[in-house]
Image 1 (cartoon, one colour):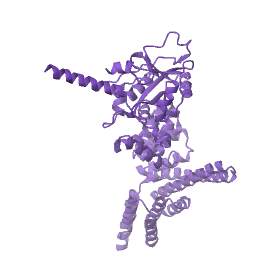
Image 2 (tube, rainbow over the protein chains, first blue to last red):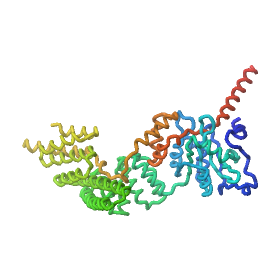
Image 3 (cartoon, each protein chain N blue to C red):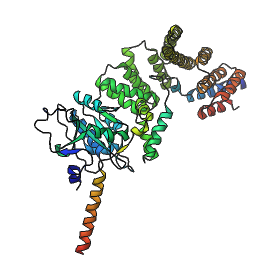
Image 4 (cartoon, one colour):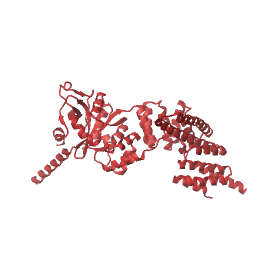
Length: 395
Length: 108
């Protein structure tokens, strides 16, 4: 019944067993290779079926069952548009969502890329089609169906049924190192370090010389408290670029975490501070010289980032100095850090005061230590940090 | 003697607290950027509106890059639930089930 329904009673366009022999003469342009739409074991599987068809088209093995397994949520019928991105990444693809149009479909086909479109299929239900061709003469797009049959949908109709999904069109292409890296950085920036680690590793598999991926992988591993693994990545990055202040600072943090190579950690954090000082001067000059308001806003943001980088680097320097028993110098470094943090960075500023207080105690300056702890407690917002400061305040 | 002991105790407290302070806060991130929580909330609300359970919606949002989140938040109707059966296929299936039930009833 389902086959009969999908074969002949469609409410969308019309189905044909195959394109006519004179398709080219009738203006049909199709992909250079055939697309096969697999049928899932279960019903309601158009998302994994469409993805699987396109992945196979690109020569990558995939099955409807595995995509369905990884994409399906238990209490959900069908899959959401955004699950396509997740499944694509899982299989080493980049899914690009764009606002589609007949023109964009044609452009994709001309480039040899089979786009997936999501259209209303009746009631409030949505369905995915893999588009494999078009004809300007007959004003039709050609979609792949089961058993190599085709569905022809007029340009006019596709515009109508596509509108409720805001013309979302998805293009899948095999990810290259740069695309893995871009996605990894995106997840890294939003604090999804586990997802970022997977993508950084894929980027490095595709191009082991990708320095930013190596550094990013090290950073994420450190954020995930995998200090030994982070150290291994940082060492590889350091062999490639020992002058990068971010790497120097973060490598110093790993050594601190592992309580290892403390003099080297101090040297590295000192280098980072010097480099970030110079970076801040450049950023400030670039901002002052920029007259164009839009570009000035960008320079302003860069200046803010440069201030934060330097403040963090001073923070690390303070920690390495304290770890090497140089508490007076550590206090100076943490005070410099506080000078560079914006006043709204309450917790970072409080953390520095907490550290200053502990070094004051080490220098047998209990009054100064208490004053710093009391100020820190007024500034701190983070409950864990507050608890630490309160514990230090207790007699 | 007492002063020496006190100094040692204080030093112990200092070292204990230094060990507690996480060094990670001073790790300079790969790139600095602010999380667009408003966009994430919009996407999550849309998923919940479509019947996706809250934990699943959270997971789906976490699985998007910031660019993807911004794209869908700009127009949440871009997110739909797609499934393979057309409305007439559901109707056809129901008719078939009805027919089978009818045959069973008539045979018994």
